[in-house]
Amino acid sequence: MSIRTLYMRFIPCWLAAVVVGVAQLAGCVWEPAVVAPATPANEPAVVAPASPGAVAALQRAGMAPAPGSATDAATGYPQRVLHQATGAVLQLIPAGEFTMGSPAGEAKRGNDEVQHRRVIRQPFYLGVTEVTQAQWRKVMGSNPSYFEGDDLPVENVSWDGCQQFLQKAGGGLRLPSEAEWEYACRAGTTTPYSFGATITSDQVNGDFSYGGASKGLWRGRTVAAGSLPANAWGLHEMHGNVWEWCQDGYEAYPGSGTEEPSRAAGTRVLRGGGWFTDPDRCRAAYRYAGVKPSLLFYFFGLRLARTLPE
Ligand SMILES: [Ca+2]
Image (tube, rainbow, N blue to C red; front, top):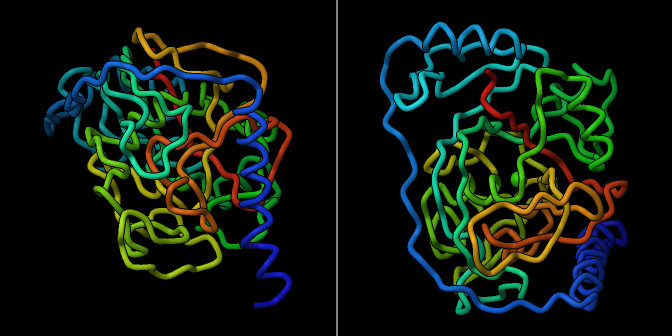
């Protein structure tokens, strides 16, 4: 194994461990919460034109119904929209309620994954894939990525850099909140991964194995956004490939109550794991917590989110 390979594989893991360890030593002690079953949240879609009001609101936000998109019966908005400045396709995620965090018996769980009910009060749009390098370049005119390729996810981006990108892309785009991210990742499932109790390298670009599965392929780099299977809500690479920045700051889960914390400042959270990441960190509940918003690595990326435009 070369020095570079050693660096790529182990230094990031070591840094991640230090970051998480410091966050835990900072006094975060959590109590277990009452666990309730997840609520299936997909609203039925109808093949009908989106409501004129929805289409007009989308136009004002620089978006349009994606070609062939069905319409969400609950809202009258398209199930999929195209954000014109980036070319990104976003999926409508329905409002709903779910159990955030992991059960006490889940292998290799972190003690900040305390289970609690969380309500997603408003439907929202979420990128079908991570933001690609072509999409980033279209807005920013440059590409910071280590692994270069138009269809690969952009990486080497900080939370601060993502905010600049989102502001320049326009249309009210933002990052998902941590709760929105986990809700969409789970897509109604309660297992460690949206694919079940474990994952294979045919499903996730990470470093395996977990839950007794045989060790799979370690690619040692990113793969094209959207090239691996989607979860039940049509979202690709929520687990693995690149970590995804969340909009809100890191804070301990309440352990009770259903409201989403709204910490606007401080350290941030990334979700889902990346191409080099141990599989336990690719779990739906894992929180890569306490990360400075200025920090960037070649395994940090992003996924677009937007509240439904009005
Ligand atoms: Ca990802």
